[in-house]
Image (cartoon, rainbow, N blue to C red; front, side):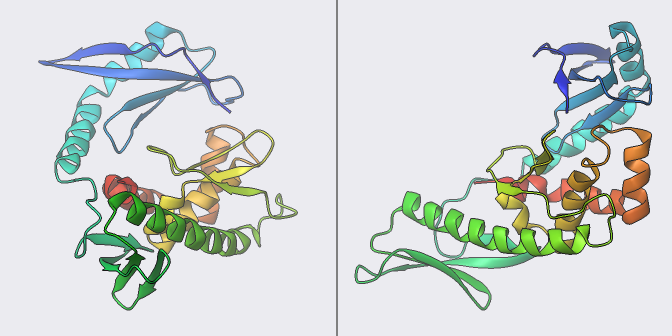
Length: 249
C-alpha cells in the first residue's frame, strides 16, 4: 500500500534539536496533502503523495516542528519506564487491557504450559528457564489472540457492506506495528495486540478493514473510520500511550 522514499532519513533543525524523519510515498493517495505521524517509539514518519516535492515536505515538517517535538518528548518519557521482562514470578503482564501477575511453577513431572488462573497467568516449566517461559507465554498469547481477533473481526465486519466475507487473518510478531492490510486483502495482526483493551483491538481491526475499501490514508479513508468509530482518535491515543508496555518482550 505504501512505497518508502528509500531508507533515507531527512532532517530539519528546530532550535537546538534536530528532527529526523522518513518519507513514505503513497501513489494512490487522492488527497494532495502531507500527513505527519510520531510513532509510539518516537520515530517520525511523513506520508506524502507522489506529487509533493521534497521542498514541500520539508516545509510541512517545519510548520509543525513544535507539535512534533512535543510528541517525540512524550514518547521518550514513556520509554524510560519500560523494562524488558525477566520472566520471574510477580512480573506484571497484560491481557485485554487488564493487569495480571506472572506465576512460575517449576515441576519436572509436568509438561510446559501456560494458562490463566484468576489474577495470575501461570506458567509451568520443568526447570526455571526464561527462554522456555517466554516461549510458553508467546504460545498462550497467540492462541488467545487468534480466538479474540477472529471473534471481534466477525463483529466489526458484520454491518460493513463492502466486506462480503471475513478477510483472511494471520498473526505475526512485530516490533512497532499493530497490523497491516495487504493489497490482496489479507489482514495481519500483531498477537501482542491482545494485551490491549477490547476497544483498542476493535479500532485496529476497523482501521485495517477500512483499507479493504480505501487502500490509502486519504480523506475518504478517515471519513469511513469516523463514521464507524467516531471516537477512534481517543482510542488510538490511549493505545499509543501504552504501546511500548504492550509490545515489550
